[in-house]
Amino acid sequence: MSETAAGWGAAPDPIEAAAIIVSELVTNAHKHTDSGRGLIALRMLVRRADRAVRIEVRDAGLPGGAPPALGAAATDAAALDEHGRGLFLVDALSDSWGAEPHAGWMSPQGVLSAGTTVWSHPTGLYAA
Image (cartoon, rainbow, N blue to C red; front, top):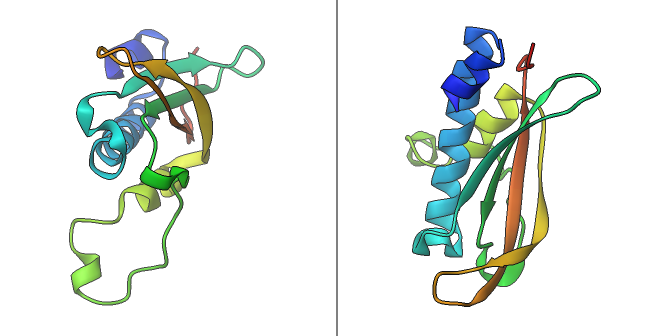
């Protein structure tokens, strides 16, 4: 992802922020959805109108179908450890981000799996 964005002429600081966003979104997809089975896809798109980069992580969805969302702000020491801050980082490093359902994909076992696409427009990440 970083090499592709650099090849598009993007500046180094936004590329670093985008790498953090990708790491957080992929980690969330693996840990908090049914994607522990390996059904995670990553793609980067460039909007033609303004050359803004959009990062998408597609997963197998949450049990029960609830989309990801920011939780309540952590206030106790246990909640402020290294876990549970991923979407707060994504929010802080993005001009905008969100989640939307996707129709699904066929797993290697031949099972159709609907899921969620979580996307981000990283702040300052544009293709030249």
